[in-house]
Length: 451
Image (cartoon, rainbow, N blue to C red; front, side, top):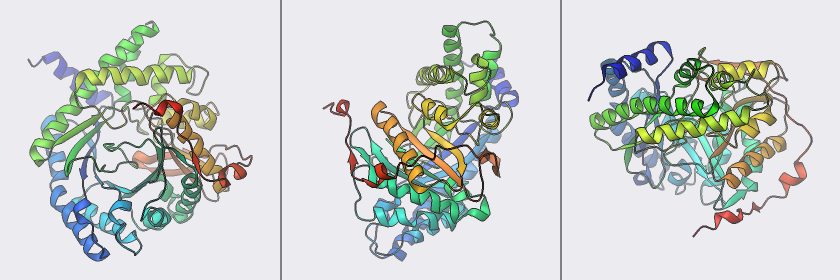
């Protein structure tokens, strides 16, 4: 039965507390586009994407108008291009250009899937695609890229970590005139998931249907507002408040996902109930942690508070929707969160503390700017460290860091919009070169043997 109180509450959350649907992401399989002739393959890619997604933006806008729910982004994800391009001998950058062309034709904000999965080694096409990432990202504005270098089941491909340190640096260097934005469109994963609607890590997994709709919600401002009403609640009550709020947020996400699925004539996949912040004032995961009782995000107790938040978000969300997936929890991207930016600028939040926080949040070291003279080996080691947290804890972790070429600690990269701005943070520069240069495979942990 429709409850008038619930309707009014939802309207208030949208108008006053920054509730929105962060993204409707359509996943499209390109497996049937594989062809040894790269030009034919790219034509198939363009044709299939535009056929399925031609009405995605319109449907999203119609739902916004009808329900009054802001839908910030309409996005696409495709089969990892390393798989699609493996039959071709030419540079896979042509696929990136085909993705860009199709994304612009459909009017979407971003398209993900210029990706490779190399957690256990490199198959045909993987190395070729990875080496082409800097050029692909510099040549496009909508295309996002990801590489999975490890998993709990397989361990960590240290050769891939070493390679990605160089690729991240090159991606920043090739877009230095655009605030090093290429590196902001590239993420390195451990335990990547196949149904993630969020960029830059979205790709359409090989186990997914031919086409599917996934939804990502937001809502940090709503959670913070709910907590503010109970300044004297104990920590158990805090958890309960977050759970109930997450339930309401997720119900909105399910409504949008089911409606979009019906109108587009494709299956509904999942709701990713991650608390995804924006640079807007009040729409911040850091501010939630401070509302719980921290003077500043990064203070002692931050990791414990984040663990509580992440757990409560998941528990509330799974009661609201039977199709929870993606990453689901709390995101801590520095440049995209006003509270994180403030904490980093005043020195309360360091990369080492962020790394500890990634053990209990949804993803990992996300949208962090580092000095431009940081070596490739240090970047590779940061990736390996974060992958180790994901591997040992059986969770998704990721690294999306931006070497600010020509800048030093305290300077700022500013992209505007959802990407926000990032203060350049200090990095430990003691050399990990000998460790990284050993190469090989870090073995999977003992608890991976679950069969």
